Length: 350
Length: 247
Image (cartoon, rainbow over all chains, first blue to last red; front, side):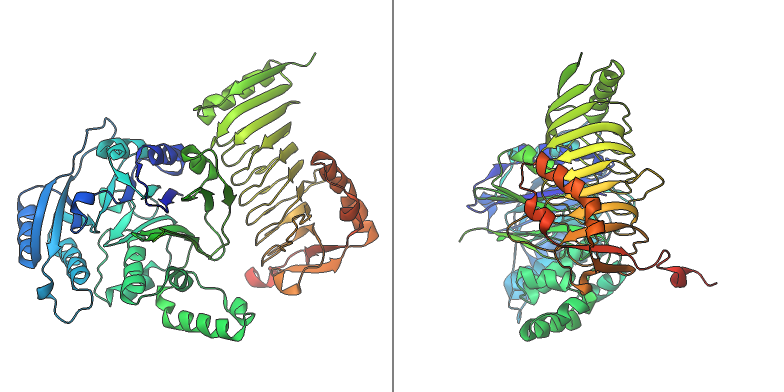
């Protein structure tokens, strides 16, 4: 049992983090104080062209020297600093959150159609698997993930998220079940443009992990949701699937439902199930995925976790509970429960 | 003399809120109005006595769990499992409710004006005179009456654009009955469920509840009473006898 809430302003108007903090705190019952986090899009306008790398360091000597060296080999560090934090009485500081604004040297990745993203993805995996005491937990352009072990309000106050303005926010309150709570295991999980919050359990984690690791991704966070972020990067970015087909691969219709579809739909859905059988996610889940262009929310096919969507003007909200949405916006134009396995999509206007 | 109190739930956690409700009932209060409810779980849980509670706002999950006797009327949508394992009394929802509405209910009535989520009436049960009833004005999502062991579920499907409950109706049902207005395609039935057109005798059992619904929400009952219903019941008392046991 975890709590999730997300919002997109389709006109890209900025929202500070104070109201999503209140909404997430309303669902404190859904967590255990061992993990909470926020992802915001549009928070680094002055460095919009740089990849914002958020790293948890165990200390600033061996791990940081090693990370600085590898980043300088692969590109240019425009700026770096400790992420500003304020001590909280009920939050134990076990890592040092640090951020870099980094530009990869694309001449070092010839033959790639997306050299800068491929370099950053490679660096994230390399740092997370080879440099002890350093974990990259956020690596997108103009995106910041802020997470730690603690209650939603403590984590929000620790990072002072009310000082950040974003047009998309994702927030998550964790109730760790299968693995213990730690800073890297808090949600959202991020890689490049992709951020993921998840309530539930990916029981197909083993299959999904073997599949994604065959494409060079490495799971290092000791929890299942990480694999969803990497699957999104593979299917969404590298294979170019639109959001609705990506969700179809993760939570496809049952075979007997496919049999009922018109011919063309049958062929499409069969092809997705056959091609992406190893990306199919089993188990109970409600998930929201964000990119710079929008958010998409969906649940498992038999609806074992809650998900509610609502709209108010330019804003689309997706959450575990309607009450949390109304904490952010009491006057909603529309509230609905999305169908199991079917995506709710909110895109920014171009 | 009727005693009435008003509780402002703005920013109030459910524990102090429920303490206020309990002490009011103990003091003989018969009407409680709770304003500005937002996300508080477990409202009126385990509550006994003759009291009517009006909830204004959006309560959290498990409203009226284990409740035995009171009437709770909610002006807003409910979250998961209102009426969870409820024993007696009524929950009236002027809105929709979430997944597992009337979960394991044992007696009393849950009446929802609009829609319910997935697994409505899951594992409802009955014993002797205790027979729980779930009445839904709108539609239900998949796995309606899953593992149902007793009680009565009525789906009126009132919206203009009629959508039937999704797949898996009565999956694993081994007691009780589900009525859905109109016909239900065979493929939507879950394992262990069978369907038949409701007879006049069957309908006579649900008409009092249809009238109650119509009166409560000011709807004309005549069409609801005239229309045909599909009755879904267990195919056998032990649908999984051959799956888990060998005799």
